[in-house]
Length: 376
Ligand SMILES: [Zn+2]
Image (cartoon, rainbow, N blue to C red):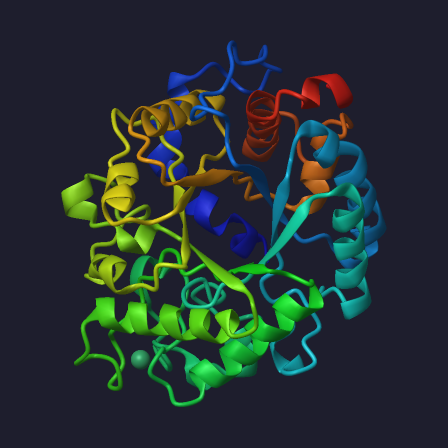
């Protein structure tokens, strides 16, 4: 579970270490980032935050957190990382060990509605199926859907993927996606689809281009959701060519999926995530030239967010739907640190504590209203 929560952030740790060292030591409470975060003319249409789903015991606290901390800080939408932590009625065999109930989902939705915060649940419906060893989720309930079924070794020893060509895969996944959207009363569902390394490998898939596998799969889920009035969001990394863009193989693709960009339904919203301190962020032009609507998604360091957003604003072609601050931490840790309780569950000099303090600092930068309403 820890691996899963940490997956994207943890995998990038070595890649961003150089960046980490370039900024002041986050072990101490850094002064606030100077200045105002870059915005397009007229501001962001939506300012959103991605956060882990609370454990069942923390649902009540989370509802208060939405009303008393996130809303007053200027958070207008939440991407809630539910994944398989929901007690699916359609496929109970896919529910995680600490899953919330339908009543919990409704309570969270009610709190968001009362606060005027839009709620977008998130799942992982292609890559990010457990780690190298399957412990939970869809592949625990349905191991036959594993693209690398029977293989112990997978690329980067990272995460498994769903086989998009398995005859049962689309049916089961759209059952789950439809149920998730309905449970949370959502008009938009984020279906993940980032960091897909296991694709085009199995006997059913290996003669089909990976871009077609990816596009047909995402379009199939999006069509199902659209028929129910739900818009689909995905991460953007698989739609970028690692070589052409200069991004690494985590934030862009080196297995051919990038050609899917031109095949995807235009209604699908793309979340363009970049966490590093880079000289340029060419994905913003790639997505603008492809006529795509995107969210810009920074992570922990305010300095890196500033560079990414400044570059994006300078290359604005009207493609931005909003800003989505990603956190990649447990809900409980984030509630502690953003409510001013500090880093309670980690040693003060640990990497986790440093990251949580950096996240709080970036939250104060991206959501400056938080300085008025929330304890330091
Ligand atoms: Zn396959």
